[in-house]
Image (cartoon, rainbow, N blue to C red; front, side, top):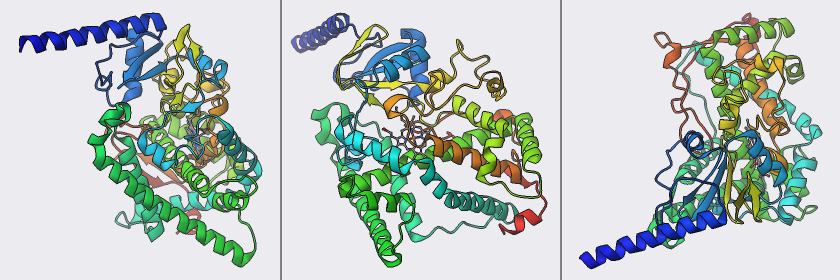
Amino acid sequence: MALSLVLYVSIFLIFLCYKLYHRLTAKLPPGPWPWPVIGNLFDIAPVRFRCFAEWAQIYGPIFSFYLGSQLNVVVNNAELAKEVLKDNDQNLANRFRTKPLDNVSKNGMDLIWADYGPHYVKVRKLCNLELFTPKRLEALRPIREDEVIAMVENIFRDSNKPCNKVKVDEQGEELKAIVTNGIKIGGKLNLGEFVPWLRWVFKDDNNALEAQDRRLDKFTRIIMEEHTIARKKTGETKQHFVDALLTLQKEYDLSDDTVIGLLWDMITAGMDTVAITVEWAMAELVKNSRVQQKVQEELDRIIGSNRTINESDISKLSYLQYVVKESLRLHPPTPLMLPHMAGNNAKVGGYNIPKGSMVHVNVWALGRDTNIWEDPLQFWPERFMKEDVDMKGHDYRLLPFGSGRRVCPGTNLAINLVTSMLAHLLHHFVWSLPIGVEVEDVDMMESPGTVTYMQTPLHVVPTPRLPLHLYTHVQ
Ligand code: HEM
């Protein structure tokens, strides 16, 4: 008994000495001590970016930790973000894929989870030159406008008869189910991901993954088939992403897996991020009625009360644009962006980042940095009247969409959608808290995960504010 205890203690001490030696000689960023086998897996609080902001107070703006044996580096200020995303852009442009992500992306054959290399360059080019061009986005404008009007319509109906349920067709239900299930599977922090020899313990998770993969594949192939048949019948090419991808498949030499992967990229990257941004902004607007009124004054001045908004009005709504920016500063929906991985050795902040390390930029912490922002926790869109900080990746103080070669390709579409949705919501309705709920009661905490939903979904009450005839076309 005593002998085995001595043995265990010796192994532990050897491990600590090795780690200490490694950290000192490898000149890695400082950080918490890793445990044998699990590393710091259980030291991290569930809402990771908040935990990382706290660790930055202890270890400094760049620190490292281990998930199992996987080294992770986190940077927490604008200068270091620039070193990661500009100075070391290409060295740190790979992706770390967990098993669920490997599955859903067919080993990185999509865009989001592809490592930097010829495949990535090809699909990124497709995005830049075909899918997200101003021309394509303009062609899709009627669809977006219809959807935003449908949203107003549902709210208006609901505010009259709150028990009405929105009908979703069978395909819509299946899409929702696949996305929800994917978030459930992908959200698990699974020890087997970081300690490969423990993978056999998580056999059930792997079975669930395979079932999800088959379901997703079947669903997407049916939709692709429907679009192909419709195209053959009418002989015309619609501007939808599905049709665009299918018609460009040969020209860009895309496998079916890549087409399916790209379609799901757009759904997973574009759907919840936009909805969440609107939800956080609405939370701030009910908490700050002064700002809500100021947006509505602008809407009344520019649009008036005799017509509804269309997308060409958005560029004239400058205060609303500051509101969107301020909301993304405080509540970036992907607060750690998406994890990058070092494809080559790199140096950041004077420390070594070995090839294979995961690298995170804490954009949530950047947006709240007291060295940069005056009164950072205050929701105060007017700060951007003083200095209109860019948020599309050119200014490292504000990076909700990332920066560099992996910057979000949907940035313009996302800003357009969020601004248009908020404009409609605030033009048509005054928003308040339910009776008895005070401003301080609104829970502004985030739930854990790569994408930050509100921990407590927002409950707000809409009151129509335009003349009734403007609601008749949506009734
Ligand atoms: C408010 C909404 C959105 C935010 C805040 C956002 C933010 C981001 C961020 C931070 C990244 C990772 C950048 C990096 O790893 O360096 C990203 C990547 C990506 N986003 Fe967005 N995004 C939004 C909406 C959209 C939309 C609407 C689409 C498309 C329909 C989209 C498509 C993508 C894709 C495909 C990538 C992967 C790019 C790559 O790996 O090269 N996003 N986004």
